[in-house]
Amino acid sequence: MSLTMTMPVHKSVLLNEVIEALRPQSGKRYVDCTLGDGGHAEAILAKIQPDGRLLGIDADPMAITVAKNRLADYTDNMVLVNDNFLNLEVICKEKEFLPVHGIIFDLGLSSAQLDNSERGFSFQQYGPLDMRFDPTQQFTAADVVNTFSEEKLADIIRDYGEERFGRRIARCIVNSRPINSTLELVDAIEKATGGYRTKIHPATRTFMALRIYINHELENLSAALKQALNCLDRGGRLAIISYHSLEDRIVKQFMQTESKGCICTPDVPVCQCGHVATLRIINRKVITPSAAETEANPRSRSAKLRVAERL
Image 1 (spheres, helix red, strand yellow):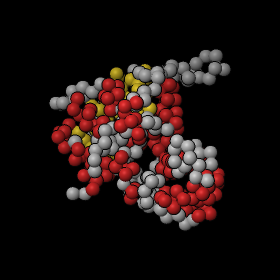
Image 2 (cartoon, one colour):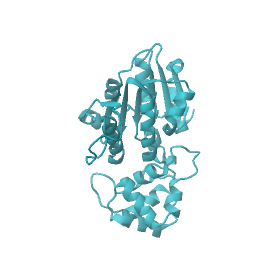
Image 3 (cartoon, one colour):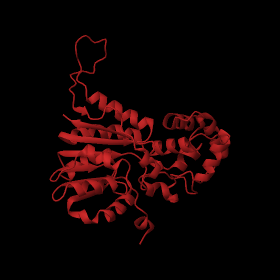
Image 4 (spheres, helix red, strand yellow):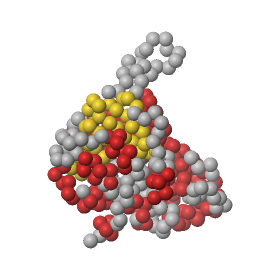
C-alpha cells in the first residue's frame, strides 16, 4: 500500500461549524469543491443518508485517491472528480448534479500535501521546487524562481504574499540561481531578510506567494464563486474557509456585492445597474476556530469561515 493511503487522517478545520452552516439533509445534493483528505465530505455524507448525494472535486489526484479510500462506505452516495473547481458549473452539468443545496470551499492546503516533501509546499522539509496542485501542469515553482526577472519576482512576492521584503528577497533569489530545492530557496530568503523572526517563519509569505501564483488560486476562486451562485438552489448555502487576507477579501467582497440590490456608485442618481440581490449573508461576523481547535491543530489558527444563502 502506498504512503498516501496510510497517512494519518486529520480532522478538517471548522468541521462542526461547516456542518451547522450547510445543514446537510437526506435526499439533497452537496458539493465539496476542495475534497482534500475527505474530512468535510465524510461529515456531510454521514448526515445525508440514505439518499443524499455528494460531489467531491479536487485538482490533486492524490487527494481523490485518499478520499476515495476514506469514504468507501459511501460509494453509492458520491461522485469524485479530479478537476479544478474553476470548472465547477461544467462539472455539475456533466454529472447531472443540479440544483445544489450546499457548497463548501476549504481553501487551505491539506496535511497530505504539506507533509509530503516531494510536493515542495513546505519550507521546513527538503524537496523539489514544485508547489503544483495538479501534477500534470507543466509550470512549477522552479520555473518562476529560476527564470523570472527580479522585478517580476518582487511583484509576485509583494502582491500574493504581502511580504514587505519582497524586493530584497527577489534580488537575493536572482543572485542565488540556480535554486533547485525548497531549502535552497529558504536559504536565499533568510539571507535577504537577515533571518528576521516574527510569529511566522521568514519564508512563509514567499512560499505562499509562489504557490498562489503558480496555481492561479485567486483568479480561480473569483471565477468559481460566480459559478457556485449559478449552481445553488434557492435556500442553498455557500460556506467558504479562507486562510489569508487576499482570499478572504475576495470572498467577503463577493458576498457583500451579491447581498445588495443596486451597486451603482453614489454619484449615480438613478439605478442603472439593474443588479438584484442573490445572497443573504448568514454570519455578519466571520467565524474563526475555537481556542481548543487551534491548540489541537495549530494550522487552523488563520482560518476564517463565511457563509451565505441563495435567495
